[in-house]
Length: 465
Image (cartoon, rainbow, N blue to C red; front, side, top):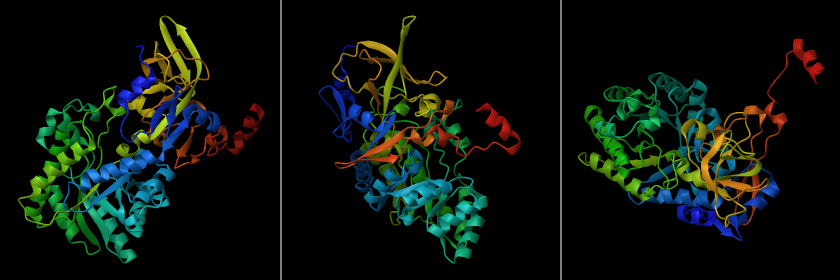
């Protein structure tokens, strides 16, 4: 336990991290973490533009170099909906995946080419469909009911709507994997079967035939997303093989051959909070790309048709390690043989710790060279346990020290809340030689700006003030 933060960081750093240590301080893309807190306040999300760009390019190249047709990487904005992050990825040429009008707004506001955007969702409203058709998006069809609305919206707009059909893949081989990530007690295959997404054969064949008859609908291909249920490349090969087999079977039944295949997201990273422990994933994105594309291509090979374009929907792979959460130490309690270090961040800001047992690396940013001599629980100040990290080795800390929590780019700010009336942090972007606030810090007034006291209670509210 006497290792320093510097030594620990050296053992878990990944190629796209912009993290270093200078003079005992954690440096984030050349900026001292504690200086960023002093300048912009605490807690603080810190986003590194160079990491975003490198992650995008790496996953793009991993798949493009292994597929015979064009590849489009569509950023899944649900992972982090910051407009500045979307703008960075749009500048890189990334497409987009969105659910609903809110994510569509953010995707287009960030400068994404709408021809490279897909709209997902198993319960799309007519307003969402109208907006998708008007913008020229691809719609991943995921309910029978939406087909008529897509046809009507496209007819009214005088154009053809571009669609894929979402498939439910049920390869028996996935039964040997744990269903823990899906919170399934009756096996992985049952978990996927019970999920609300997609259509299995033969219902998919019937819908293909229906879509091909629609005068204002152009069926491009298929989409499928099982998600991360293992970090073994073989798991992704199984899914790719199953998708290829489904494409071949649907071609046999309907005569339709896809122009494109959307293979979804869930691509693991090297440091994975979602793995619920400190172990580093030994597999690279190139390993997953090779496994998935190789199995998919092999499964489709018996049908001598053109190779479809490949689209994929990564979110956390691109943004996961591009953001750190900085927090300031407050009260420290030593009692009953235990140590609690309170900080001004909480699981309000990292909800997946509470909901999914996510495990994040935590460092004392201003004491990186100090021995990590004490085992502590790092906790937030809310009225629930709010344990950001249990049994963590850290230096002896004092009020005002700064902690850095790694890998907070995905499903952190996007699903954060304001429990206990606590405003959410600001977010900054570290660019090439510049720093900017990309999401301002909330105020208490912001929290209650949408509230209203009806007239018959207004006097009581005034009296209480």
